[in-house]
Length: 116
Image 1 (cartoon, one colour):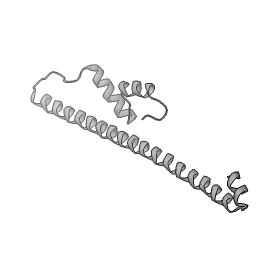
Image 2 (image 1 turned 180 degrees about the vertical axis):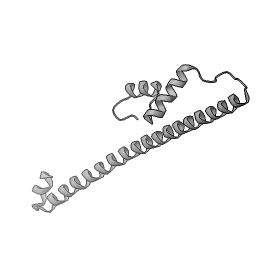
Image 3 (image 1 turned 135 degrees about the horizontal axis):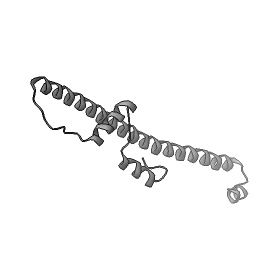
Image 4 (image 1 turned 120 degrees about the vertical axis):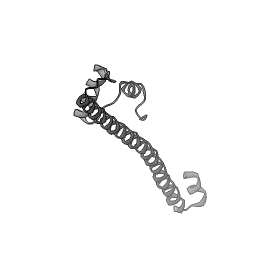
């Protein structure tokens, strides 16, 4: 910039270089925002999928309870498809409304600050 100013004896080029820096800053800022928005979209999609899976599990448990109640009315007995650990886990899920599996927790602890 200084070499051009000395050669041309004009300050018009100063405004050109300053405008290039300002415009370049806005371009870089826009790119950073676009990357963050794409990561947020992925995170929201994953959360929606988790919520849908949770609702499906809750509905399945309600259906199983209804089927068990119907079987008890007719005197039929069937082995419980859930073990005690799964029963406890599903009851915790119903109380909290959302949970993360231990696998997801391990993945998130291993990932960097920008990985979702």
